[in-house]
Length: 108
Image 1 (cartoon, helix red, strand yellow):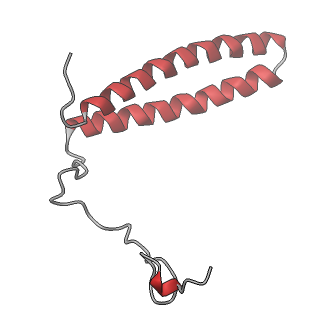
Image 2 (cartoon, one colour; image 1 turned 30 degrees about the vertical axis):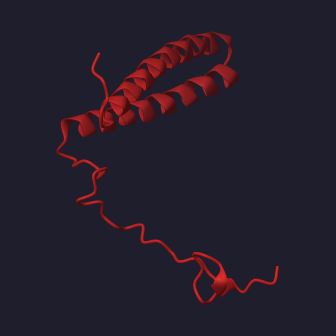
């Protein structure tokens, strides 16, 4: 290429890109992360916790459906269908909560 590393934009004299400090705070920034005391933030975190729990139960039901004998597999398949419907409901609520948290979001 013929270009010295220190002459490239964003490169240090040693030819490396600078490492960003990932521990920086967003205090004072308009898009700063909201406090854990914020009820909307707590609601969103609770929904994500419920989603994670449902996903674990769904994975277990899928494994049971695949590896259990017929009576157990049928029950696991019914549980899997119910869990998928519940997961869809939770994901819809998560998307709605995330939308409401955006600046300028409309309330219907």
